[in-house]
Image (cartoon, rainbow, N blue to C red):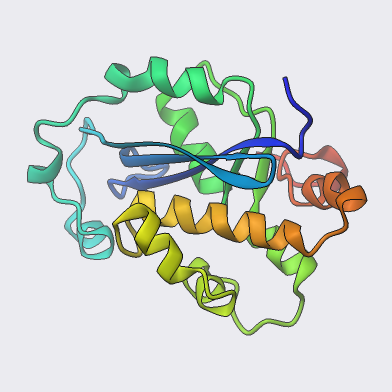
Length: 196
């Protein structure tokens, strides 16, 4: 296994509106040695419960879109293979962890790095820390759209933008401080007092 600041899967989910949501779209983008490796996974997933129409207005995914999609059980081996021993990264990553734990009952993340927390720690004083606004702040949105071929609130676009943001934020931290910055953004780090 590589050092904690060398290898991650950046994860984004879109859900069906339940609490915690069933996953209807899942994207994972690999970050290796503080750069996007080019390896990604992306699935639409058929949930057990229908997608709430209010949620469809946000992410655009309809029940028709997922009617022939695989179930989470169909893809869980691939997901476990990536996530079983790897730290994950997400923007407000608690949502991704809760949604994945609902579907992958035997999975617990090694660590869960929150780019929302990382951005607040490293760039205090910004007007907004939403993923969309941080993408604009750091001029990453166009690159995320080009790399993913998707738009905001697509899991693949959001995971790609989060990966670019994660790399960009770490570029501004001296390498000797990477481990500390990452540990301070880990929502599972007991020293931070935030546990799932």
